[in-house]
Every structure is written in structure tokens, then in C-alpha cells.
Image (cartoon, rainbow, N blue to C red; front, side):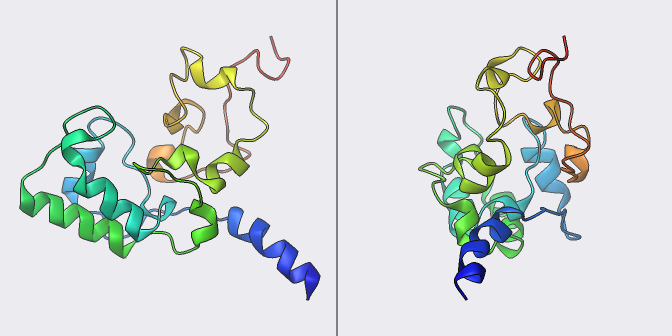
Length: 153
């Protein structure tokens, strides 16, 4: 019983996100025009609703949408949100994928300098290291960390 309890957090953290089948065109058009249209399973419903309520001050930008489009995207995110709260612990306010326990666990071996490397830009730029991120694929064997961080100069 104790072993199962101790393994639960790691199994929750090993979650592999997937692209839902019901992605509305507005999600890719609006959200994907500035950054990767993140997989809804990367945050729980409450966090996505928080993000969508604050579009006027969306991480330093005004990403306001007309109410119909906003509700369509919020409904999509809520329907497909992650359900394992442990994964998302520490997302902050506003919620940041890069602050979640899941993200921190998955990237714990990376040197801090990777995030400021000009080839990466910042931690939310998934596609800098995950070439299949747009397709929702984050296979640990298909990662391209910029050279120099693993002694491969």
C-alpha cells in the first residue's frame, strides 16, 4: 500500500498530453497565432477559465476576443482540461504551464541557461526543443536541446 502511495505522484507526473479531436479552428487561429496552441490537458479546468477571464492582460499582452469566440475557446479548454490536480500544483496566478509540478518534473535536468538561450527564447517555447510540439507530441526520445548544454559542442 505504501509503495502504491509513493508511486502515485510519479505516475501522475508521467502523463503524456494528447491533442483532442474537437479543436475549434478559432483556438488555433487566435491562440496559435502568437504562441503554440497549448494542449488543454496541460492545465486543469479552473486554470484555463482563469486564463480566459484575463485575456485583456494576457501575460503582458492584450489578447481580448469577442465574447462568442472567447466562450467557444474556453468551453473547448474546459472540456479537454487535465484532471490530475497533482500535475498542475503551483501553476500560479496567472497560471503558467512552466510553473506546474508536471513541467518542472519533466524539465528538471535541463540547465537554467537553456531557457534564455536565443535558440529557445523562454520556457514556454515548446517547439524550440520539441520538434513535434505542434502535433502534441512530446516524446522524450525526440527532443532537440540546443548544443552545448549536454557537452556536445
